[in-house]
Image 1: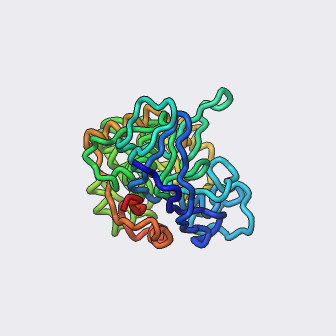
Image 2 (image 1 turned 45 degrees about the vertical axis):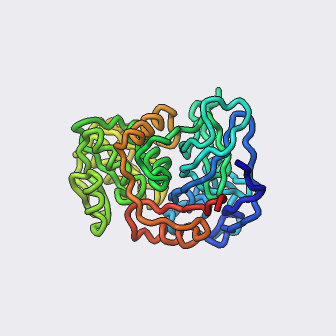
Image 3 (image 1 turned 90 degrees about the vertical axis):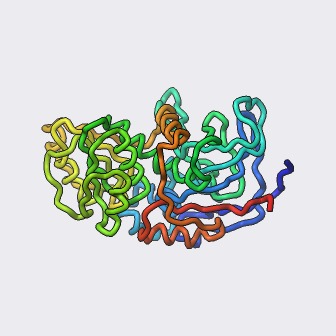
Length: 358
């Protein structure tokens, strides 16, 4: 098939509000280099990290919750890995179809439906957990086409999920499966999951239930029914007073003022795994509550390939069912992100680029 010279996509031009996003129709279609493929983007999910990166929340000078980032005139290091190069095409959740192969790509063919993790492992001798983030350190899925390294791709051609549902998997489910793996969650354990009506939290509820764990979830009362349907046994409001010493593991993407309660909710020897801090990254801590009770804390961003591979096996077997709240044309990204920030929905918001063949 012949490829166009230009494509539509959304540039992040700087850190800031929605005005930092620019819909363009004259972006050069990238070429697949050695070991790479060119993918037509069929669907791209929206995540907290898209908003956080746009705002520059990852800058260490920012200490607020994600919905209260001060509008600084200059953020030095607002990306996952530090300073970003602008313009950048964001979007870490992708479902796409291969339309061109670079040199020395032998394991894939044109027409395959594929996805990849948002946190792409790039271990180095001096850092075994190094990674780069799709849509942060490299251009992502908020465009009609995206170049990906073949080594990072996973075939989902046979998965009984739609393109939109596949696009809901990488960030939310990849993060959730990493959290559960690091915390060693297993059958009959009692797990507390924060932010359970959000994308990662909802995925963690479903994946923990698949492992045979008993799940207690924190979520707004109006969203409790959806969280129960995903596999939670019990829900509590986000401001509930938590029982002490009840849980084998805490899966946290919220942090903020409730953090001391989360630690005390663990049984002695319990596992605390964290991959987000939407209520605030700076928390009060009494280290005695940790070392005297042998609590293990896991920071979870690096995603080992075997974790994502296991996740894709579940996808291809039809054992996962992402909840989709709404879809939008890519050109409506500003409204989609506004709806995401409002957090009145339960389930994934997904962007659909215009089909370049129409």
